[in-house]
Each structure stands twice: as C-alpha cells, then as structure tokens.
Image (cartoon, rainbow, N blue to C red; front, side):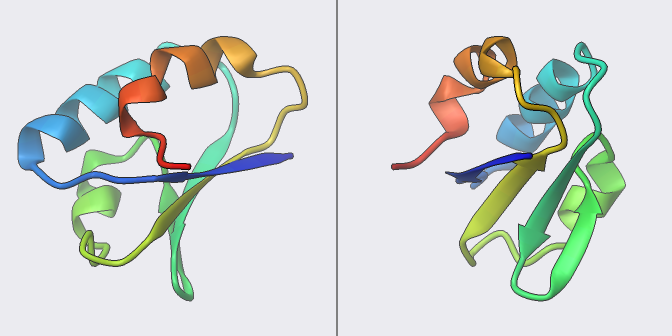
Length: 76
C-alpha cells in the first residue's frame, strides 16, 4: 500500500480526480480524519470535509503511473 496527501478544493477538481482514478484498476481510498471513502466515488468524496487534510491510500505497490497522473492534486 502507498499513501500520499492530496488537496481537492473545488468541485471541478473532484470530478477530474475521479475521472483519473477510474482509469486505473487499483483499489484506492481517501481518508480524512476517521472517515474513509472509495476514491473512485464522487459522492463519497463530497461527503468528506475537503477543508481537512486528505490522504489517498492505494492498495498496490507499483502505482507510479497513477501518481504521475494525479500530480496536480498531490501535496508534499
């Protein structure tokens, strides 16, 4: 499993993020505090408090291709 912090501020960013995530076969979740949702679910993401730090958890070891496509959302 690999984790990276991400930032989603606007509805358009959430839509773009979900479109990119759905192109990959990996299972992935978003964690905000104690809440966890499927990273491929637009409704799930909107149920999170997007003003809080969000962590993307990808359940695969070789997912650099996904992280390259999600670079605009990754904060480090």
